[in-house]
Image (cartoon, rainbow, N blue to C red; front, side, top):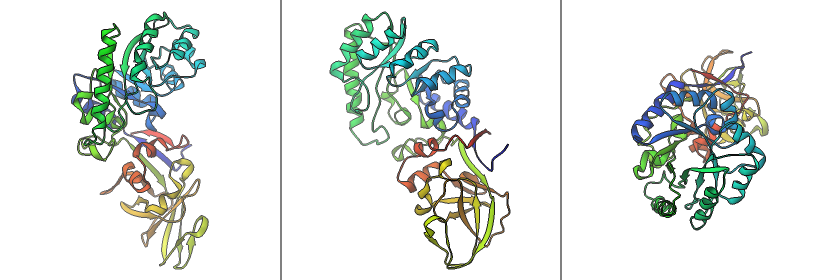
Length: 367
């Protein structure tokens, strides 16, 4: 069965992006983040493509995400980026997932899960204040790792909060703090074979942050990490496009209104095309209220009325439109392009949220 709403994932674009990032950050390795189902692009297909393009490892957010990759036959190193519920760690051991540790309690959980010399990375909180051990407590956790027969220190890392804001001095403060922690750990015999700091923005904009590995997330999918690094991301190719077919068309008269709340008033006679895709699929309900558009017939068409759960409507003017005509919500048609970043800018969010928000009931088709 083929629904009249789908996403296409250009795996050649992902291959290009990973190769471009790899060349930019060499000799650092690239590990690609495929959490959240590959940022909405399909984790297994993205992982295979990224590895074939030169990535040497993968990053996920959940044990379940890593297990799914293993069950798909992917054998590359997989790092779970935060501490996990103790009951998940036995599966992590069985599937050879690299753990993240920033507390002694998590080390004890690895022991209880039956781990033996299991590789873990120590996460340092250098200022983002999300997860990680504070710099003054890092030695205690490193000592506990060294003393435990269940885990071994395979890496040390941190995460940057404002790497896409090139003039913000906070990034350098984070890097300085991290270097101090590394030096203190090394002096105590806790030097790690792998050190990593960079997300996509830092990989592009902060050479000093590249270290042995960079963690490429949104950049691997061809989306700029932020306005401050748009120029540095210009060579990246967006991999995901979102499509639908016209399921209904009708003429409406001036003075009529449309959709829930009847919020849109037509000021002229026009044709309205309905697309079978809505907020349950990841098209934000309020996209119509911020000027959201769709491509039909190679032209931009305004979304009219509130986006509903399963459908939305667009004003196509006096153009002829037929049932089954192709519409593009994100991507290109003719000479026009609508990007996930455009949606994000209109909605006051980031493109990460847009692509991750495209729901599982939208089929991903490789292109």
